Amino acid sequence: MSAKHIGLGRGLGALIKDVPTEAPPAAPAGGGVQQVPIEQVHKSPWQPRHIISAESLEDLTRSVRERGVIQPLLVRRVEDRYELIAGERRLRAAQAAELRQVPVIVMDVPDREALELALIENLQREDLNLIEEAEGYRALSDKFEMTQEQIAQRVGKARATVANALRLLELPDPVKQLLAENRLSAGHAKVLLGLGIPHEQELLAARCVKEDLSVRALETLVEKARRSPRKRRAAKSDVPENHLQYLADRLHEHLGTTVRIVPCRTLANGKKLKGAIEIDYFSSDDLDRLLVLLGVADDL
Image 1 (cartoon, rainbow, N blue to C red):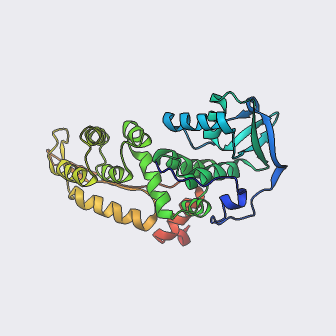
Image 2: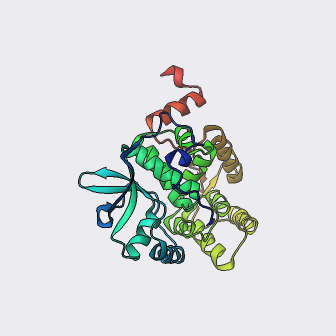
Image 3: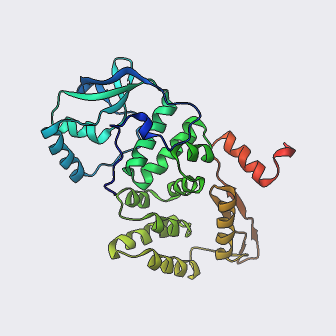
């Protein structure tokens, strides 16, 4: 992970100055920096970050023991406690250093903005791994019915970046775990997504880690896997699978969401199996956007 950090010490305006917003950010509810008992600060259910490097946490803990927490945590008041919005590394380091109090800035924000601020803070610090970033986007989509375009605008990313991140969540859990541990890159993940067979995705992902394969080497293996006959397939595709994947990729670029094309197949006895086209959407607004792009919105 990058060591570059953009801190909260310059205030919330510095945190989101480059991010378009629908409304001005909420003002601090507590009049600036406060010292609060550390046991009153709790992790938020919206917190996108799950994995923190033990080495980096140990380094930060040493610093906190010597100098305290320099940059305040961003929190909001929830009943009789404080819910963390941004600063989980600092909170964990303060806990490990056995501090009794931590500096906080108390914000008056709803759930949606709390998640947005947590995502923005972590993305600007480059602290999130690929899966945490994708899960953060999915939370904005699922919990608050935001379209990919709205998410992209709020976090200062291109819509294609958000769409590609969400695609990573289609991978099998073992592969997602390797991505979360930074043992596979986004480039490796993109190639594995093109294979579309979970078991083979897992095998090739494990081989990438074991043999330290480059993205180019993985592309070669995936292409070979696509061309090799598979005994478990009792039917022959009526259209070459590489062409179907090409079409799915073109639709993905046009629609900004994942598209899967299941091929028609012909069994050995001549019976035809139907194909299908599956298009992912994440909210009613996202569905409306897709219908417009498909040219059928006016018919409904």
